Amino acid sequence: MFRSTLACLLLGFYYITFSQQVGHEARGVGFWDNKTCNGSNGDEGICMSNLQCGMVKGKRVGNCGLFGACCQVQRSCNQETDQKVTFFNSPSTFTESDCNLKIKLQNRRIGQIRVDFLKMVLRQPSNKTSSFTCIDDTFTVTPSVGLPALCGVNDGQHIYINVNASKPGYNSAELKFHIAKRSNNSEQASWSLKITQLEVPPRNVQSPAFDADWDINSIFSDFSLNPTGGITTKRGQNKQRLRFILRVSDYDKVAPPGCLQYYTAKSGMYKSFNLNNNNGPHLANLNYAICFKKVDGVCAIKHTPVFFQLSGNSNNMKATDRDCDTQNGNNLLTEDYLFVPDGITSENVKACKFCYNALGSNNSVTARSRGPQFVTFMSDDKIGDDETLKELGFSMNYEFIDDSC
Ligand SMILES: *[C@@H]1O[C@H](CO)[C@@H](O)[C@H](O)[C@H]1NC(C)=O
Ligand SMILES: *[C@@H]1O[C@H](CO)[C@@H](O)[C@H](O)[C@H]1NC(C)=O
Ligand SMILES: *[C@@H]1O[C@H](CO)[C@@H](O)[C@H](O)[C@H]1NC(C)=O
Ligand SMILES: *[C@@H]1O[C@H](CO)[C@@H](O)[C@H](O)[C@H]1NC(C)=O
Ligand SMILES: *[C@@H]1O[C@H](CO)[C@@H](O)[C@H](O)[C@H]1NC(C)=O
Ligand SMILES: *[C@@H]1O[C@H](CO)[C@@H](O)[C@H](O)[C@H]1NC(C)=O
Image (tube, rainbow, N blue to C red; front, side):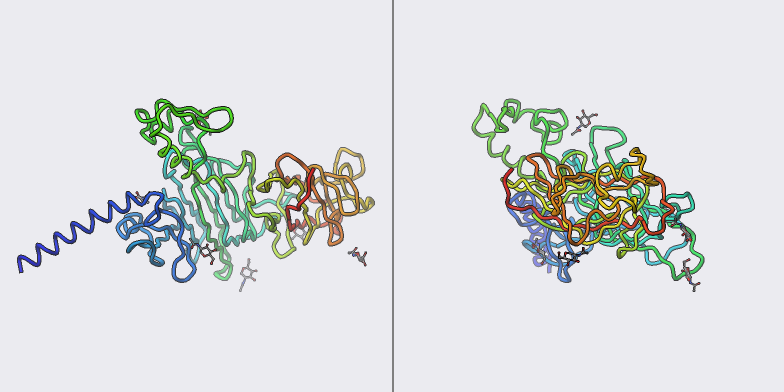
């Protein structure tokens, strides 16, 4: 009896020690590496030990690694998270309320937070203020991402939030829903957000933040980034640790500065907020950039509309550039447009601003540029009174095409 208890204790002790060691050694090797894993019913999780999954109040959605847990961290109203990936889900029913999630940075290297709206259905914007603004149900973010409150139907959208562990006001983030009073129980609000904390490559690996975090003061007091982007070390043995540091950053997912949205595939689709099955309306007071990860050696991107309906002037059929501009004296009441730098349409018109019906099933726009690839969407705070010029929004397929500049 005593012996077997002792054996169990020893085994348990050994297991925990072993687990912790493997967990530790597994950094970058792949047992419980905190990388994403797939749970049994398609749920995405993070691979960690069972112990760790319990500690972060995660839900085990499958197996991974060596006796590890594919662990999904789920949070709901008025909770907080410091995890790499968190799912923020709406409660099943609502009365009028606020529902916020506080995001604490997992480590000092986190520089961006990507929020994927797997699902987001809130009440439609109101036109009471003579523009389509979200005043009943609202979704807002701190620190600000330069957007007004969002609402309506936004499944599949995403946003990037810039954070900075060293900067007051930016060293955490908060996602805030306000849900308006319902007159009956049939109108609900629902969302499921996937929140991913992204490590940004260090600007300067000798900066105090990185020294402190990596405890590299003593080990790496003698390396520097050289002008070609390589690394110069004085001591050979530093190289391996250094490679590790650079590898852990979420390089491929980090958006260039100034991008609210960032698409990393060679082709895909983007659309305006609250496109709502092509019924819109798009929201007022928008001014944001949608960026695309440049494909090496390719400098053209083709934007083909699936749906395109913005405000404009029905007397002017081109609806490009100055036609989209209120200062042109062309009686436009509103100014809403998609801006595509260096655009040339399939009808061979050079133009950058597109409004009204400028783009359609027969008219795509290709941008050729050696620089970064992005578009911006601008909307004003007015609603035109011409019923035929509805402010609905857009959805566009994009594709990098093999073309030189
Ligand atoms: C994985 O995440 C857990 C929970 O945050 C943490 O305790 C553990 O140290 C991490 N493991 C690795 C290998 O980074
Ligand atoms: C999870 O499943 C998706 C879809 O089947 C797949 O694309 C992805 O590579 C899988 N991820 C991992 C970590 O296995
Ligand atoms: C504003 O909303 C009212 C009621 O829903 C609707 O009748 C009116 O047409 C809307 N105005 C505009 C400009 O969309
Ligand atoms: C983060 O904030 C600190 C303090 O304001 C600043 O010195 C640093 O450059 C910022 N880092 C980035 C990547 O913007
Ligand atoms: C419940 O409220 C919604 C939105 O206000 C309305 O469209 C719907 O008709 C209402 N249903 C009932 C049964 O009153
Ligand atoms: C698109 O072009 C085809 C062939 O030129 C034409 O038959 C069709 O009517 C056009 N469609 C639209 C919506 O302009």
